[in-house]
Structures are given as structure tokens and as C-alpha cells.
Length: 139
Image 1 (cartoon, rainbow, N blue to C red):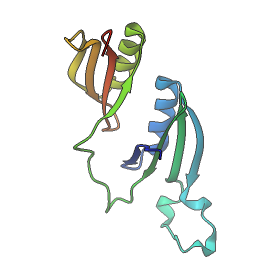
Image 2 (cartoon, rainbow, N blue to C red):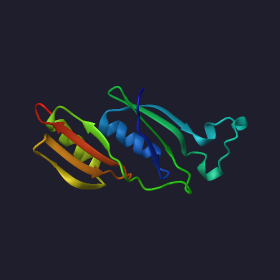
Image 3 (tube, rainbow, N blue to C red):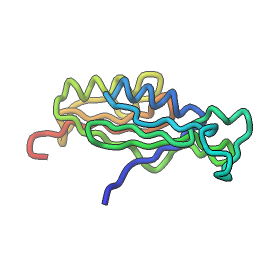
Image 4 (cartoon, rainbow, N blue to C red):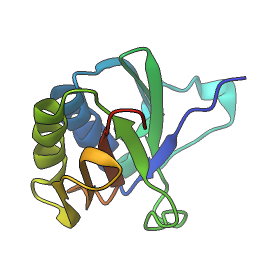
């Protein structure tokens, strides 16, 4: 079994994935737009949504992140979860935290804790909550 996060965006999935590709060192493997669906698939979209993302897939160090643009009537602000990333190098973890939190909000600034060489929590500019962790030895 494999468990992968699937994120829904408020019409800014493509911008978010390009940001994550740069910040996290990922590789976008697919950006399928609404207009790419076959006419006989029974998935019509209004003209203003043709360029929106129906399905996106990115690989990051062997892990998969998926997403799409939620239809406006179905979008809900993310809550009740965080995407957690673990990075062994504390300087790299702090760089990624700073990049993810740029334009967003840092709920818990990155710093040393009793359980980590560095840990921080933020919500990025796209509204996605993140936890960045550089675990302490033995954790």
C-alpha cells in the first residue's frame, strides 16, 4: 500500500506546483488540464475553467504529491492536517522552511526543540499547512 497526499487548490494548483518544484526540488510529472479531457469522457467544464488543473503529479525524492484545482463550489480551506517533511540536514531544513513560509505565515518559527535539531510549522502562500522537521539524534 502507498499513501500519498492529494491537495485541492483554489484555482492556483499550477502556480503551487511550480513553487513546490523549485522550493522542494521536485519534478512535475503531469499537469492535466480540464481541456485535456476527451470530449466523450462526460467531464465538461465551463470555458473559464478549461485551463485549470484536473490532475497534477509531482515526485519529490521518490515520494508522490498529487493535486488539482477544486471547482469553486467544492473548494474548502485546508484544515486538520499538515504536510510533514523530514530533512536530515538542519541547514537544508531551515532553508526549505523559510522558502515554504515566504508569502505565508509561520505558526511556529523554525528552531531547535527537545525532539528536533530544527522544527517549524507554517502555512504557505497557497494555504497549505507544512511541518518541517530535522529530527534529533535517536528520534
